Length: 557
Ligand SMILES: *Cc1c(COP(=O)(O)O)cnc(C)c1O
Ligand SMILES: [Zn+2]
Image (cartoon, rainbow, N blue to C red; front, side, top):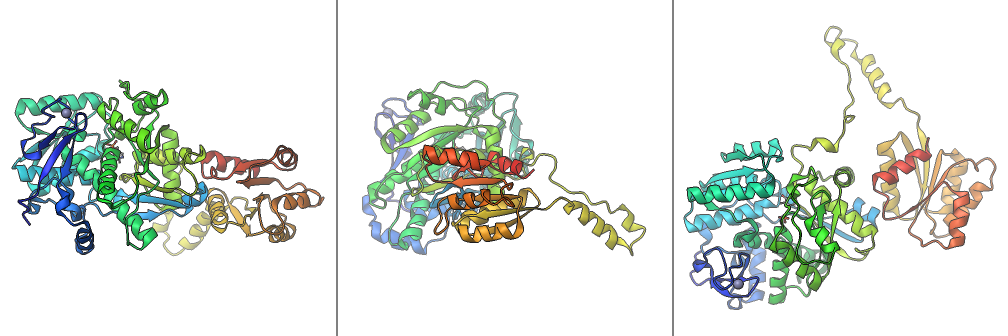
């Protein structure tokens, strides 16, 4: 479909001067600002008709083509990008005490990260402009996505990588036929080198966040989220904004695009508010977080990143931070950082309790989510959407450590094929030959109880007995004399305080260690009493981290 009448203008984010897309020369003609936003003449589209048509359209991000910077839809280069699922979190939501936690699963894009959106729109726009060669600088995902879409469109891609980019990612880009250039510099230095190479050779340079197509591409995440939340909450009768959108941030293109999307939808009357933004950076390279802590609107560049998470290694965010800072001032939100260890721990948590294997940059996001909840910044009723930005493929080595395999020696089975059964039995015996510990969990929230038993069973040879109230819990304790009791305090009928008193006053049970897990604000007297009676008091909402699990394990030995 050729929409010859489609009008796309660009508005300067600094002085608001309007330039038609077709006349744009890379910067605002009035003030020289390079970050501009696309504006569409949408009053010509009836929003209700548009919404009705959307339901019939193919499920890629191009369903929203009226608000994307392409004139002729025959120029679209597609590998079925966008329309990723919005997955409702179960275990993680329970452990954090959140009622409405959603994961926007961008791992399901054609090359495994949300950069597929950017590549699809950028490469389609290049095709429309008749350009057949492009230079990009990337820590991995942009290069991979551009290489794939470039291959499909017949557009040559030159990909520049900083020294610390993972080899596996460079190889992936190379498979698609991209020219791979690895530098010995940082990401920021590599961007400069790529720019001068492009200039010298007269090749089109991808301008990242300064390119209209990037922000417009990221915007489609906001449209999808609003539409998907509308289906969750209102049977698809209207669209809805979440209270929070969270992402691990490097250059800031994702949240800037998503913010633009929600603003645009607010303008069309599709949603009635803008979400707060939780922007999480890696502690070793967190210029935005540092500036935010100091209340500054301009970030001081960081020269050398101390983080191994190279995907988030933008040391100099420039104007992007100002735009995000202003967004947070107006609409709420927070900048926070998480360390590499916290990110790798979060990756394990996401894989084991949600079945989602994410890359380190996304681990940073989830580690930040844990903190924002623990600090009370995100509240239990808030509707939270997390950008699950990328897949850990191939699996990042640091996630697993050394002891992730059990070896079964089968070298003898070749010579004596008839008696392997005993050897297997022996090997299996060895694998499970540890003392079984018995733990009673007394907890009236069923999901929390089930999660707790999964955590225990995954870590140790534990047999977990669940009780939904104090009376049932006490019956089991008397029956089996467990190695550990974990109890909630607030329960219907016999509460946790009574459970603890009963156990401590029975000489045959008094030796059993007790761990209290509670969401209750304890009074001074209650805390004092519990301190003398129990071994450990843990606050709910934090119990999924490694420290929590370690402290439980110690009580078992
Ligand atoms: C690029 C990238 C980010 C950071 O995105 P920005 O919005 O540009 O800061 C986060 N996670 C993954 C997986 C990425 O590829
Ligand atoms: Zn301007």
